[in-house]
Length: 422
Image (cartoon, rainbow, N blue to C red; front, side, top):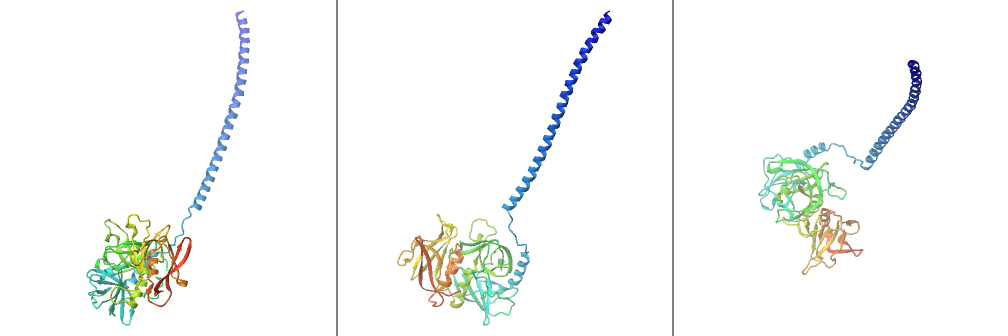
């Protein structure tokens, strides 16, 4: 009985257990299908998001690169191999350079051969200590020429012209007359390659290359009692003895006269900073000396004195200033201010003040009619333009300043001065 009862009970129990198991299996089956669907959906979402993110990343990268290229488009660079030009310039221009001895080493540039006479351009400070005993030697020659005459010079801008009788030694002439290097169309940019050639350390003619690092500034040298000179700056090395030599561009044009290196007048250890008087200043002085040189300081020029304002306490400009004086006009000082405006800052005292101008006037232009030239922040060009005029020349156009005062412009003439050098 127990067996049968047990069997019945077990059977019912088993049926109950089986039913519960079936129910659990059924539930389990339902829940299992849900998990699989959720997992599949999750993977689909992950894949879709991954694709979207990747697409966004690629598109963003492309757009970023595109707009960066647009915003920082590189400057087109001339790929011409300039150093081939430099070697050609050195070869062609070294025979134009001479060694000079006048109590020290110096250099000069042969600029003219006329009537069996050679004309040599140099710095005044190269010859100032021994004006009556200047010697010249041509490149590669053994002998020194002692029959050298000083045709004339200008102390303020450190320019001098020498003459000697024609030499049998080989040499070349850089014909300064007729050259376009001093014309207004010949512009030189900061960064342009240049070659300085001169009598380096008194050991003979050598060449050094560099760039124009600043087109115009005023420096105070230790020569001539601490003279302020308008110059251009270059990285070409100017060693002792190279003063008076030539600074040439890659076309072989003379663009300046080597004059100083920063270590000559600075207590600081300075590399790659040398200076040349630009040809825009040299040429009008050269022409004045050729025509009116009497062996000394060239006279009857406008009295121009460049000012190195950078070394003055309280200066408001890094360009410089200029003092201008004539006996008939009087004197005044003008400094570059307010973004390069040449502004009158002081009128001379005493008996000769410049009555036609007053403090605060802005000088806009120099000259009249076709010779009128606008004033820029390049102080070398300013001095060059003023040096083209000469007292009582009675040819060309009269000198005048165009000034701006209270928003109005007017022309102020300078009596007795006329354009002498074109």
